Image 1: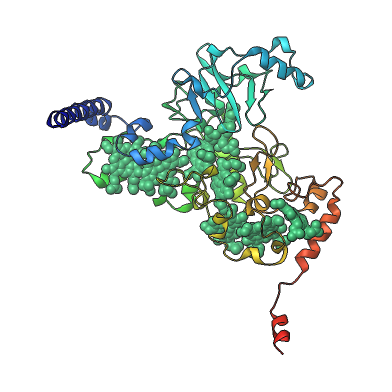
Image 2: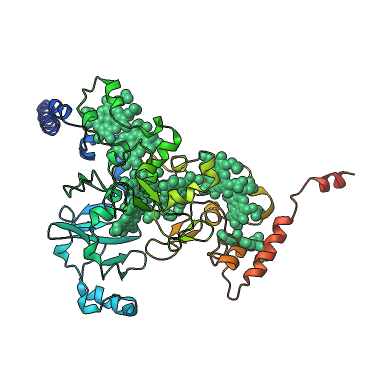
Length: 416
Ligand code: HEC
Ligand code: HEC
Ligand code: HEC
Ligand code: HEC
Ligand code: HEC
Ligand code: HEC
Ligand code: HEC
Ligand code: HEC
């Protein structure tokens, strides 16, 4: 026993020593502090913030861009030219160039995967520049579709997409520090923070952005720097806010699409396309009242059960934690079983296939909205009987809405 425990003691010493030297190699405090503050990557943050790292790793942020050479399993499907071609044949009429001129990537061409929930795209390199291969795999129904097959070589990934899917992007050097949405995407570059001695608590705090210490409006713009669609103001042709840092005002670096954008919005200011949660939310009563992304979502929280989309509570419990009373009366009464989000956050936007992304305006869409502007409504995920007459459903809804809530009179009569 004694021998065994001594061995364990010795091993832990060796382990601790290797760890500390490995760490010392990675961080040279003096050197880092002499250089301008810059990105160092989540692996370094992990050495001191293991819990945050662990929680972050379970979210999609950490998985947005994944290196195929490190783990082949990040490919959600096989990169098989014949299978791709079979699927492309089914949509041949939609293709902008003939099939035989389309570039179908080979397995060994694919360097990184982009995405793993709704769809997956593939990063390849041509003449030293990253491009997005013109084939996209839609994960829910397992089909391949085309993606800019005619002009993919005019769309360098770093410039078009890079800053929203990788961390520490440098457009001049054509590099990025880390694939995926790393710690520093929300906390800002952290080399000086990491290099400060551990005992210097206030210097430590002063060299990194803590969103919960910012004003609410500035903090939510961190999320808005990616869950948004528009144009960079400082670099022409870039789709992400080049130059923006957490804690700064987003508007200086980015101009969002207008809420009446023809292609990406429905009439009335509801998003038709994905990564537009911030645009939706800004128009909502929640935004007016300071109920922000972080009121409903966690981005890393140890011990938090892993609900879909990392909401603080599951399903209706999230909404009723604030809206304690709503479900009792009027139009709500007959649908007391109904899920708040299914009516107030209908899936009307598209990532891979239409209707896979939820609205964040939080307004329930009625049959009359569809009749007026053709926007999908919240009702027909359930009320989808054949020949359902929308005008009639609207009328029945109106009747339901007009019905007064019970006022207690019946009880008085019964007591007489
Ligand atoms: C060498 C250890 C170390 C490394 C590496 C490190 N941190 Fe820290 N971090 C600390 C300490 C110590 C504090 C102060 C804790 C306190 O407030 O008591 C801190 C605080 C923070 C805070 C809260 C600041 C505040 O004002 O409340 C954030 C956010 C943070 N770190 C993020 C990061 C990120 C992101 C990285 C990687 C870029 C990182 N840390 C790397 C040790 C480290
Ligand atoms: C998507 C944005 C985002 C990413 C990515 C992110 N954080 Fe945070 N972090 C936040 C926000 C927002 C807060 C403020 C507290 C909150 O609302 O949870 C925060 C708070 C913190 C704090 C302060 C203590 C606390 O829990 O409040 C630390 C330390 C921290 N993060 C470390 C990290 C580390 C380390 C990573 C990477 C492994 C990371 N964060 C990745 C957004 C992010
Ligand atoms: C302004 C930031 C931004 C830009 C620019 C951007 N994206 Fe995204 N993208 C996001 C966000 C945020 C999401 C996740 C939320 C959503 O889809 O609603 C996302 C989702 C995706 C997904 C789906 C991920 C999954 O798990 O299914 C893919 C694939 C993708 N983007 C590829 C691209 C490509 C390729 C480009 C460039 C042509 C691009 N994006 C440009 C922010 C951006
Ligand atoms: C640097 C860009 C970036 C920033 C900043 C960012 N996100 Fe994201 N977010 C993304 C991308 C890209 C995805 C899709 C990842 C994927 O599908 O792999 C995503 C996914 C999500 C998801 C789905 C996560 C899951 O695990 O299911 C939520 C929720 C989310 N983001 C909320 C936030 C909040 C809240 C903030 C601000 C505190 C924020 N994001 C900041 C880019 C960003
Ligand atoms: C009032 C609560 C609330 C607010 C505020 C909120 N969300 Fe959400 N979000 C949700 C709910 C609920 C879901 C759906 C969860 C599910 O499908 O189970 C969701 C889903 C998402 C998704 C996954 C996409 C999808 O449609 O499945 C992303 C990404 C996201 N939110 C980002 C954000 C961002 C960024 C903000 C701030 C601009 C934000 N959310 C504000 C409640 C909220
Ligand atoms: C953190 C607390 C909080 C959470 C969680 C929350 N809300 Fe709200 N909500 C508010 C506040 C505050 C307002 C604005 C005050 C008001 O108008 O009643 C509001 C307003 C609304 C409105 C507009 C009300 C009106 O008068 O037009 C709707 C609809 C709504 N919320 C639905 C939801 C749904 C659905 C969820 C769950 C996905 C949810 N809320 C989660 C706090 C919250
Ligand atoms: C069947 C669809 C449907 C469901 C399910 C639903 N709502 Fe509503 N809700 C509406 C509509 C439509 C309105 C607009 C007013 C009206 O017509 O009654 C509304 C109004 C509201 C309002 C503003 C008016 C008020 O009563 O304060 C809030 C807040 C709200 N809903 C929250 C919720 C919450 C929280 C849930 C889940 C417990 C929920 N809703 C479930 C359709 C729905
Ligand atoms: C989650 C599924 C679901 C959603 C979403 C939903 N309904 Fe319903 N609705 C039902 C069911 C099931 C009933 C029958 C309830 C009963 O009889 O107690 C019902 C009953 C009704 C009734 C009363 C009975 C009738 O058919 O005349 C009306 C009116 C109605 N819904 C309208 C709407 C409208 C308008 C919307 C959209 C704002 C909507 N519903 C959204 C499932 C749903």
